[in-house]
Amino acid sequence: MGEDGRGAGSSFGTQDTDFEWSQGHRAAQASSDVEIFRRVWRNEKAAPEILPYDHLLLQRIREQILLMEDTLSTFTGAASDELTLSMYRMDIDRTMFLLRAYLRIRLLKIEQFAMHILRTEELWERLSQQEQDYAQRYIDILQKHMEQTVLSKLPFGYQSMLRQATSSEEDDMIPEPTLDTFVFCKSKEPIGSLQLDDRGEEVVDMLTDDLYILRYRPVKRLLETDRIELV
Amino acid sequence: MPLEAVITNCYILVSVSPLDVLRTDHTFGKHTRTRTQTEEERMFGRRAAQLCSELAQNDDDRLRRFDNDLFDQVIEEANEHYHQLETRMVKMQQEGLDIETTQNRDYFGALIHHLSLVRNKRCLMSYVYNRSQSVQRLRWQLGAVLPADLQEKLNFSEKEFFKNYSDLLGSYMTSIDLDLTVDTTPPKDPYIQVRVMDDLGEVLLDDQSTTLLRNSIHLMKRTEAESLISQGLLEEFTG
Image (cartoon, rainbow over all chains, first blue to last red; front, side):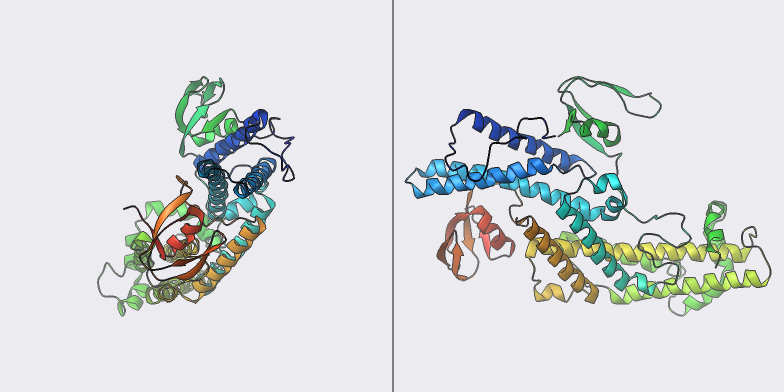
């Protein structure tokens, strides 16, 4: 997502002070980035597992917000009418909300599944640098807390945070997201027949803009290739 | 301690009712009888279950005091299970029995103690973990400083966890240069009407200093009002 050429070579920059709100193609571009981001946010919100972090998109969104703030302050200096100003303010606030809500929902997932993400390379790569630091430190402080209150007081052989006992065959105390949970998903293009189970007994035929409630696991790949979106 | 043998044969438990094993398990029964009276309370893992059910009473994020007494009792129970487990294992070894294959009452006794221990461990951890989640929510709602009445509901390690978590969240928000704790509801209007709950004196809002007096009503930016609202200093005025 975001690599579709629409905004990758963004002409925005914070230095761009003579930016005008009414300028046609730029306005269109602005709305499309925010629109993509809104979809990314919705997907993140609905998906049970953490989704890839799009650095470029996030960077563009943040640049855009700065730019809008800049423009707004230039306007505030000049005598312009209150209503217009508050509309612009509103626009910034909405984008800011989107940005914060997006990062918040990611943090929540990182906290919940930190150890699972850390041991699964594919998931680990989906975090931003700051999020990786966060996950690592979060595990550290949680582990310390657990050790102080519970683990150090238990008998030898039962003191691991990740295993019930040393005799367990694998780390069996790591919470993982439920990938079999149901999600609302909407196809963005004709998908064709989608197999929902291993045996091929349940198949659904998805056309453009079809809305289905399906398990997350079978649609996971479609979401990664941006052929469906979650709503 | 060949616990592996115990765990690999776990499936055998299905065919044995735990109660049968408990009845033959006189040593443990005698030991706990001094503390608990009724048959039901002597059941393994009962206290751990009580501990977990206390979590359910933490409704509305109104955190209860850390139950040290019950918590320590469960820890003690876990260690007692281990003691019993060890005794049986040693006994079997002394009798020259192969732990992999022998399935006598010592074996099942040990297995039950192992499983009870593991269950107690899970309950203890989920008690601590779930409370730590409430502690994290407090950081989001109230900021980096906890009011005294909440402080005393946390145990020592939880206070430390709160501080560490607060630092962690703080440094993450600094690293991305964004305060994530504000703006928790989608904005409908950039401005919001608020009523002041207490005399707050001079406050710097939107680069202007304003005096907030008790019960006065102000129109201010939502982003600025939110942190004050969550601290209970302002409330949204809808009248």
